[in-house]
Image (cartoon, rainbow, N blue to C red):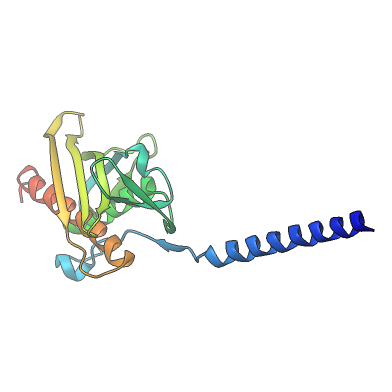
Amino acid sequence: MKNRSGKWQGSWLLLLVGGLLLVAGCARTAAVSYYQLSSLEVSSTGKNADATGKLVLGIGPVQLPEYLARPQIVTRLTTQRLQLADNHRWAEPLSENIPRVLGENLSLLLVTDRILLHPWPAGRATDYRLLVEVLHFENESDGAARLVVRWAVKGRDGGIVLEERKSSYLIPAASQGREGQVAALSEALASFCREIAQEMKPVLGK
């Protein structure tokens, strides 16, 4: 009888511990929030969204570092240390979101709706092609957005129109919280696009 009683007590103890662990695990599980980078609004550029320019601009390839090839939003705590936010994630891969936002921004800034994202169909010709290598794209520990890119523009014949250069942006977050940080990342991309458009004006004769 003592052995049987001991076995039952042991079983109940295991069930109790298992139940407590399950409850604790559920208590720690927080809802996941999803975010997306946004493009410029028409009012912020003064241009008509229904652009009719004949310029054909190809975007890409846009290369990203491996640490950004993940759904979690990345925060840089120190030069060597990154933090991944498991409960704050991108709604789509940055490898898709960033090129699309670049295309939408440049469509407004250069007044053309003829934007092709890499890889575009064979046989489609571009007047200019924007090549981008993203070196850094994350929030700092204070929430500011940091973007560092190396980029160049090629012409229709493949010749260099704007030589490779490196551009850096640090945009403070306008509001607290993750949404404000993502908005700052979007603004960093917008600043990059404004620089591209400004540099291309002499090339386009504007």
